[in-house]
Image (cartoon, rainbow, N blue to C red; front, top):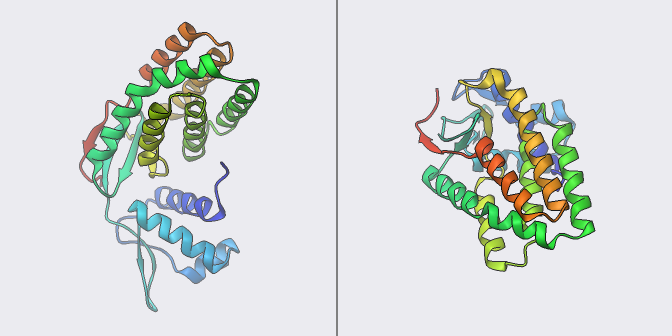
Length: 234
C-alpha cells in the first residue's frame, strides 16, 4: 500500500535526523519551517509529527520556541544488519518477531498450495518494487512488509493468518537504521535479500511446497532476527 504524504514526510524527517547527525534534544524544525520547506499543509505536517511522536523519534513542543525536537533515544531491537527503534516494551517486539518466524513456513507453503494467478502477479509486482528500492532501507522495508502481508493473505488458515498479520503489525512502521557494525555491507546485504525474496515468490508461483520450504530456510538464514533487546543508543 502506498504511503500517505504524512507517512512519507515522517520517513523523510527520520532521514534528516540520521543524515544531519542530530543529537537528542536538537531542534529539527518548527511547524512553519516544515510547511515552507515541504509545501505541505498544516494537517499533513501535524499528522507526520503525531506519527513520529508515537514512534518515539521526536518530541513535539508547543509555543513560540516549540517545534519538533529529536527525542531521547529509545531501546532498540537488533536484527540482522538492522536496528529497530522501540519507544515502549521492546521485549514485545522481540516476541512478535519470534512468532512471525515460527509461522513463516506454514504461511508460505500454504501460499504455494493455494495461490491464484492474481496472487502471483501481485507478489511479482511487489518484488519488483523491492528491487527498485534496494538502495533505500526505509523504502525496502516497506515493500518487504507489504510482500509478507500479501503472502499471508493467501492462506485459508484464518487463525495462522490472523496471528501472523498481528505480529507484523507490531513491527511495521518502526524507525530503522543500519547496524553500525555492518553498515558498510548494507547495500550488498539488501541486494541479497531481494534475491532471496525473488526465489521465495518464484517457488510460491510454481506451486512447489518443497521448493518453498527451501526458500523459507534461505530467507530465515539471511533475515532471522536473533533479536536482542539493546540499551538506548548514543
